[in-house]
Amino acid sequence: MAAIDDSRPIFIQIAELVESEIVAGTMAEESQVPSTNEFAAYYRINPATAAKGVNLLVESGILYKKRGIGMFVATGAREQLMANRRSAFQSQFVQPLAREARKLGINAEQLAGMIHESLTAEASEGSVL
Image (cartoon, rainbow, N blue to C red; front, side, top):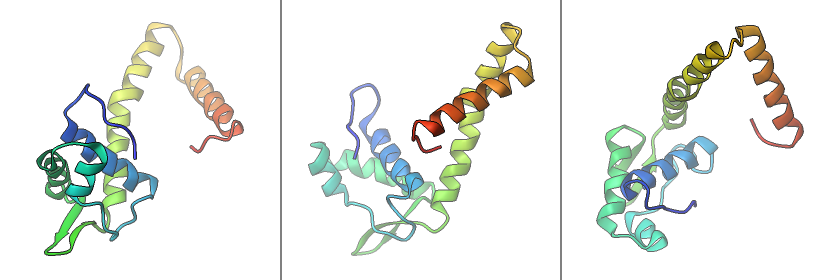
């Protein structure tokens, strides 16, 4: 698991860590996730803080509770998270990139070529796309 930092609320970081594990396939659908006490012990945080992060994911349908057993990854959670991240990617990265490209006089074909070149270079370096 990744480290927690002080730049953002810890409960949000806990939720994001679980989301990232689901997207990466480390936490499979229908698999049990660590308990809030396990998160609290591992990150040395208050169990209530860990629970708040996990509950965000329950509210959004990513996790569900099995009474007396624990939290589990919901069926379809990975695809839901991927769709959310694709949408966020468009607004957080692609739109600002396109605006900056226009300012610099880079047309769509040139920009596509730059992106293709970058993706190809990443792939040849052994990175997973």
